[in-house]
Amino acid sequence: MRKPEPVILTCAITGAIHTPSMSDALPVTKDQIAASAIAAARAGASIVHLHARDDADGRPNQTPEAFAPILDAVRAECDCVIGITTGGAPTMSVEERLRPAAEFLPELASLNMGSMNFGLFPMLDRYPDLKHDWERDYLSNRNIIFNNTYGQIEEIITALAPHNTRLEFECYDTSHLYNLRHFLDRGLVKPPLFIQTVFGLMGGIGAHPEDVSHMKRTADRLFGDDWQWSVLGAGRHQMTIGAMSVAQGGHMRVGLEDSLWAGPGVPATSNAQQVTNAKSLIESLGRRIATPDEARRILDLKGR
Image (cartoon, rainbow, N blue to C red; front, side):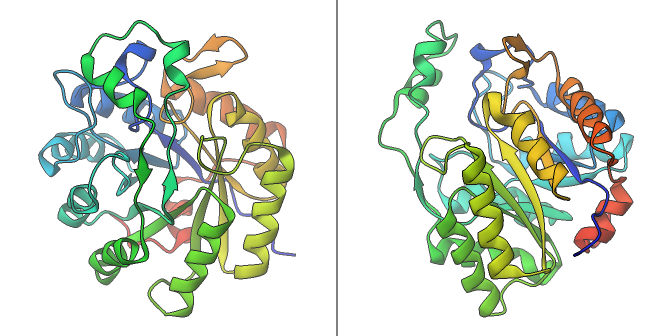
């Protein structure tokens, strides 16, 4: 059995699912996103996973110009691994989603491994008072298909892999693991594979412990020792699913992109708070958080 590495703790700072009206803690301006990422890194996050937003109304913004000041600020203040999304928002084209990673060629970039229905509309019942018209239009859309076709996935891989940008493979369902095996068999991606298994988002696999076990068993069978397992539990599932991974030698992801909560009925006040809570969980299970350089070694990253 492979000896567990230190826990790679990723913090996803703002994302594209939650909207500004849902939480005052959600960073939405470039200055807020940068400051929140720096605070999360100082609290112990090995990796910060970055999206950008429009300063005026907080809507997702996938232009390189929106990312540049965030990247500059984070790089100036800390040595954490920076991951850039190629998922953007599910309503964007793949060309739009790819632009920041193709421009900045980071150490790490996320890659969604399959198309899926994407249901945000149940959140309207929980957040009826929205500040911006775009929030209601975005959340109420019942026809979102998050496009990640084989051709689109290959386009992202071939744009980034020659520059040694490693990919964080976001797998929302079992078929996404098989899609990844397809690209591994073709030699378009190489180990170690950093697989982020995603649980509890409407349109993907659920958040039951059996769902978590099923995804891990499948990935173990498909990839043997050539992969590093991390989990993302949406909403209230963030810490419980994280505990399942950490207890089995895996890694975890927290952050306001994935959950606005610090505990049952307790709204999170910051990304750093969630990192601190995760650190306590990890240490209580007899493990420790990987430093950024340890994360670089484990994932075979090219470095800053």
